[in-house]
Image 1: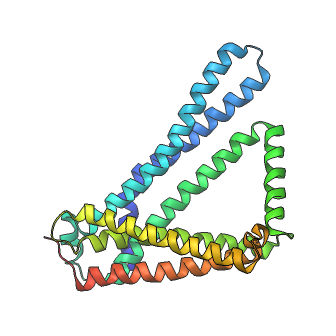
Image 2 (image 1 turned 90 degrees about the vertical axis):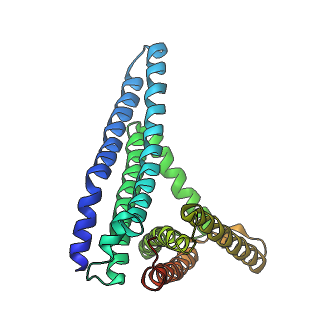
Length: 262
């Protein structure tokens, strides 16, 4: 049943989100081509104007794709779970866990695709100018090695990626949990959901700030020790796992025990 739910969710989202990601690809090609043309052209006046317009459009499109993807997935979760479509969904002989997992996995996949394409887009854009790309990569490596205080191993990079994936799942589940908690209100459910999101965000920032201060005190105010990549991924991974569990349980509790579609 989980596979069928994921297949249905994918069919309901792929057309619009595929078009959005194709926009990223097209704008990247245009922007990279413009950078290449600028480097080989002597008509700086006109080319500068065209380049600025293309780059501004490129930046705006990246922002629109990222924000638009998030808004669409949030709207999709709300309408298909607690909106008009929710009546049909919750009458199906489907376990609540399967509903949450299917929606979370599909949403996380789309978010991952969008983020990965945007990162690749930036790399391609910088790579279109070899000198800029090499300088950027050298600067990134030097900065990371300086902050970590030691060489970065392949294991550290892999675990950092794993921690990032769990953090992404936590962000997706947090949206679902906030929307679900908003349904406990009899009025203005969307506003209450947003209030829950703001409240949870502030609590997370408070805990993050306290952890930052504690680490600075323990490490005798050493930023290098605090930003060590060989320890930071562990904290990120643990925080991601705990957040996933908490937000998942909240969503499941509301959806299975406090469901109210009125």
